[in-house]
Image (cartoon, rainbow, N blue to C red; front, side, top):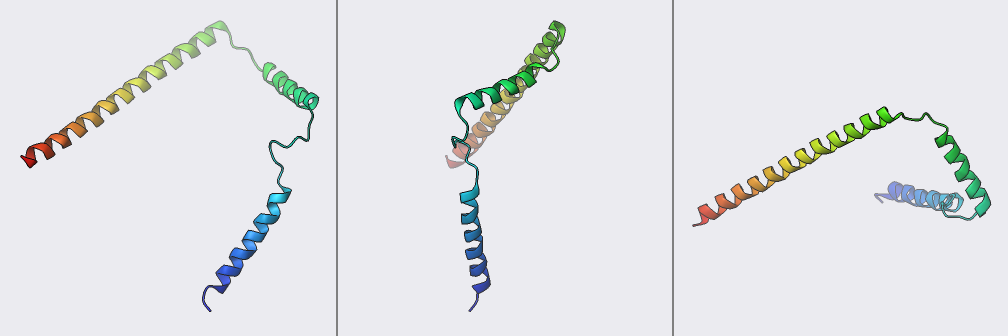
Length: 100
């Protein structure tokens, strides 16, 4: 019969996946207690805090760059929306004028 190879492949794949589900480490499993989790967060926070600090001038430059990026993004979105509205209006008028 045709398709026997694909069916047996499907069955073996499903069995393999079923076996993997049991060995998977779940994110919300409670293997750690609160103190261990807190210590892990503190270590991660210490690694982040140990990084280089930005000066006031660097922070000002970053702030100005982000403001400028937001302005240009807003302009692009506004132009795109106006273009979409104009195209929709033109299509509507073409259909409306051709129907009457």
